[in-house]
Image 1 (spheres, rainbow, N blue to C red):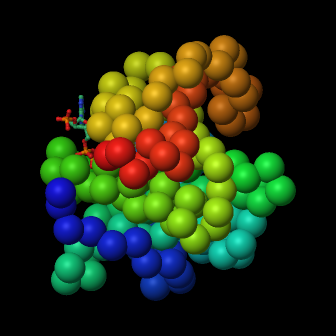
Image 2 (spheres, rainbow, N blue to C red; image 1 turned 45 degrees about the horizontal axis):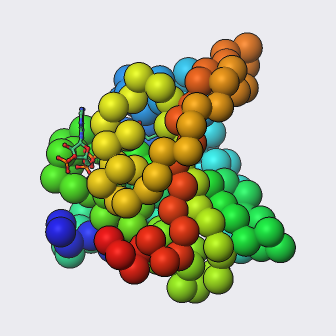
Length: 169
Ligand SMILES: CC(C)(COP(=O)(O)OP(=O)(O)OC[C@H]1O[C@@H](n2cnc3c(N)ncnc32)[C@H](O)[C@@H]1OP(=O)(O)O)[C@@H](O)C(=O)NCCC(=O)NCCS
């Protein structure tokens, strides 16, 4: 497995995040607005409080930025969270997203004591579906016409992983 670490996303990562968010696939398959500015990214990074929403930079052993990994709102009471990820085009197809997703799942089960994690993947995003499958997630079905951003609605594959399944990967 590729050697990557998750480190808390902070202001210093803003230019790297901005560059990744300029990629057409990131614009298409994530809720990133169509026009992303440095100020918007700075505000977005600031929204993650480290408890109810978390975000990490995915870095290699030399601390080179490869991408970012985020949670949705953490349901501490219900023990659930949605996980998301994006990888810089130059770092793709080396297992970075799979390693980042597995590292987030380890955080969820081992540190946050959650009982279920999900990844919601647009239908028509085979790279991300492959990431979820490769990380051991199970495809539960397709959520139809989910609000994406503005007036856009999309169909989303719902993938999930449970604690005992992480141990099996
Ligand atoms: C989806 C994304 C995160 C994948 O990142 P990555 O680091 O290249 O993924 P990995 O290298 O871990 O690949 C995992 C699997 O996906 C497959 N894969 C990667 N890119 C693929 C592509 N473009 N088409 C088909 N399969 C692809 C790999 O072959 C691998 O499968 P395998 O192990 O069976 O060979 C990256 O393409 C990206 O940032 N896309 C834009 C943002 C996005 O879609 N985020 C997810 C929103 S749900």
